[in-house]
Amino acid sequence: MTSWQIVRMAAGTFILVSLALGVPGSPLFMSTWWLAFTAFVGANLLQSSVTKWCPLEIILRKFGVQPGC
Image (cartoon, rainbow, N blue to C red; front, side, top):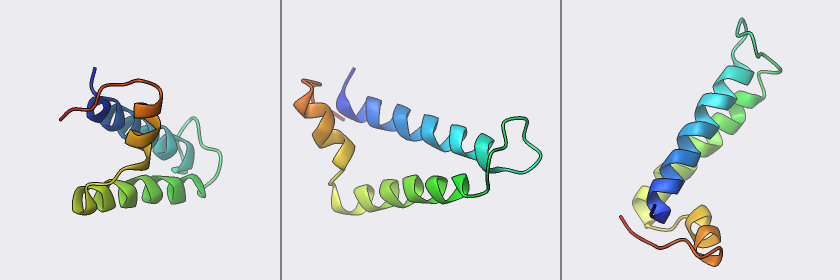
């Protein structure tokens, strides 16, 4: 599995979990502040698409994950 596959999987998981924790009426609702985390992940995805720089990819490379697209 390449680093970009892991980044996309992690981002999707973070977004879905934070939405489940932040949307009132959800069985897992904790606080609406979780929606700020959702916005942060979305902003990071947008930033990385423009700059081609992703902090999570750098961390994954240090753990030995192969880069790729």
